[in-house]
Image (tube, rainbow, N blue to C red; front, side, top):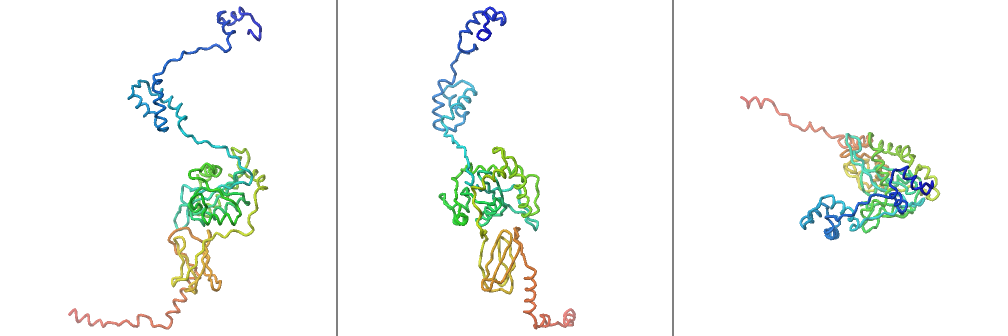
Length: 392
């Protein structure tokens, strides 16, 4: 009113009803008038040094315990005063960790982690089995992929990582993993299988420090999204159905959604990242397990808690067995003959016999006993009259 409209103090007094001296003091003040409560001494003041000493000895000490110690020293104040003051000064004594905002360059990293579904996966024969999903996510575009495996052993985990790389269709500069037992050999060094895997792909690796899961936050957040969006409300007939639904979820949901922090779809962002990614190797990686054995008289090989039949005609000869995620294949080393081909079964304690192997076993068994007299011809027949005489 005074400085903008140019009104006199009398007119301001008439409009506001304030006393003219109040108006003069307000005009002469550099700040708006307000009520200021005079500071009063706190009952905690003379105990603040003791609070600092206690927090210096143990920054995590509970506020209630501090209040109990102060009461023993003569403190008569209330709970709220101590709690508020401790909450205010505790950060001065705690070594808080800070985080730098991470910015990913196109084609820089592909993060991996293992996610365990809450429910076990149906694997046939009325059984279920605990499974793990190897989850991969590109740092820049946030494009993700996943592969179901049933163990944390190196062949399975590396097969899952290779499956994710194939789904993405390109290679980054580095693979980022935590200290999973099959990937980490101790002291931040990679295990031999993991180092060989990276060597064949010609990519670098980064093994995170213990407890530093925040360093692969991209894949951690993707796993959180899987827990809330993929698994709830779904049922799976078997492991192939699980993998099919998982691939469909990535293609139709995770990779085409509007990413909350990027404000962009991962699939669209991948189009810009592809220029910085490298092509996959022309030859696919061979990650199958291999074992060599001599075919035993009972022609079966034991793989992952199950027995798979081998060709009985190869008994005594050496065969190489290749175990992939989808089938079991055995080949004779001396001639290259196919000794077995079975679909891999993830249920436990099963005996899987090829019908052709069963027929050969039957033929060999009949041939072994051909020309021999039946066992019944050698049995002596007792005269029943003997029993009649004994009874008499």
